[in-house]
Amino acid sequence: MDTAMLFRRRARMLRWLVCGRLGPIWMWKALLLFVVIAFTGQLLGVIFNKSSVQPAARSVFSSPDAQGPSLGSCQPHTHIMFLKTHKTASSTVLNMLYRFGEEHDLRFALPLGYQLGYPLPFNAHRVKGYRGPRAVEFHIMGNHMRFNKPEVEKVMPADTFYFSIIRDPVALAESSFAYYKEVAPAFRKTKGLGDFADDPKKYYDPRLRNNHYARNLLWFDFGMDHNANFSMTLAQRGKAMIHRAFKLILVSEYFDQSMILLRHALCWPLDAVVSFSLNARQQKPGGNAGISGSWVDKAVAAAGVGGRGGRSQAKTLPNLSLTEEQREKLRQWNALDWYLYKAFNRTFWEEIDRFGHTQMEREVALLRMRREDLARVCLRDGGKPVEAHRIRDKNIRPFQSGLVKILGYELQPGLDNTTRTACLRMIRPEIQYKDLLDAKQFPRAVQAQPGQQSQGLMVAAGGSFLRQGLSRTGERLVGGGAGGRTVDEGERDWDRSRLRSNQTLAGQEKRRLR
Image (cartoon, rainbow, N blue to C red; front, side):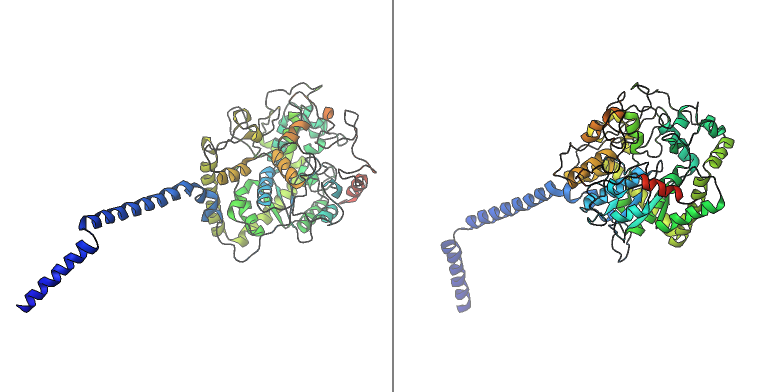
């Protein structure tokens, strides 16, 4: 009985506490509902907030795939010299160097114009901002030059990594003929490449300007006498010189394998060597793109050089058809180049043997998958190159040749800023990219907007280099006009420093590899 009474008293006390002191039950239910609603709102707000910034966080360029397979404990090379040979996909390689250097705030050894004194042997004073041997630290050198190592060593640090790229001389001759048909006198007079191959000496005069495009162009770009008669002694000496100077020679026919070797040699992430083919030429109307061209290719035709009094170029594509016999004749005509190609093709595959064929296949597959992924993200039309007039953004239109169409790319719309910036770097044409880097590196100089400097120097089709004070290879002429002359001893650089003449270098070149 006492126990029951005690229980009832405690129950009454509990009801009094809840309903009297702490309020009625309905109030507690309302308070609980309010807390639930507030918590739900906060949770939804966090979710919506995250979704609003997610695209930047998920940029394809910040994914783990961007790094590629581990390279161990090596340190990335930042002192790099690339000999940009002609008609070898070298513009695509230069784009990689431009991208890496820009992303890491490196300093480029840029030319005063668009080439480093080409076709004369390179002279250190052709580098913009050069102050004397190693007075300024330059990280990357890669614009067209005729190689001259003593002068290059005045500009680049002692630990510089030297590399270049070569191509089968027959394929190179086809591309060279297509681009320089109206520039090289040896090509200009012929009906087609087969006609030239049948009897090169009929058309070729070694004394005429720009005929170096018609014979042993690789040998010439490496700084040697391309008109020398072939001998095994000479060829072996030339190969040995290149082997001593360059740590890696790539082969354009095996471009993806070349990029894997280059990535490991430079200790760079995978994305640094993923690329889209730049300056590709259209083989025929509606056809597929070929291997990349050079600044001279774009600029020469854009300015109407060889067009006789400024008239526009012929619109028909050059005849590049060859029989197997004519292909063999071109190998004989370019015997020094053919020797280099065979020799460095062998050393290239020896490098792959050391690397491991299984590993090479695996990494090439990853590189191609990555290229496809980036093309889907970055490019319109599934990543296919398009004709320049279809590119809406004029700042990324490649300059055109009168005989061949240079193709480019359009960016995918709706990209976030981080992704768009990275994608734009991958498709920015060579001339516009050089202008952009020049403007960043020399901000105090009077600069045109990136991409406009080149348009100012190169008038539209029907104009002339000479009218703008440029030589046919794009170098500035002193005094301008058709009567202009190349820079001579005593002339001054952009910063008023005295320029050295290249005449002594030309004399040195004649004595080399005799």
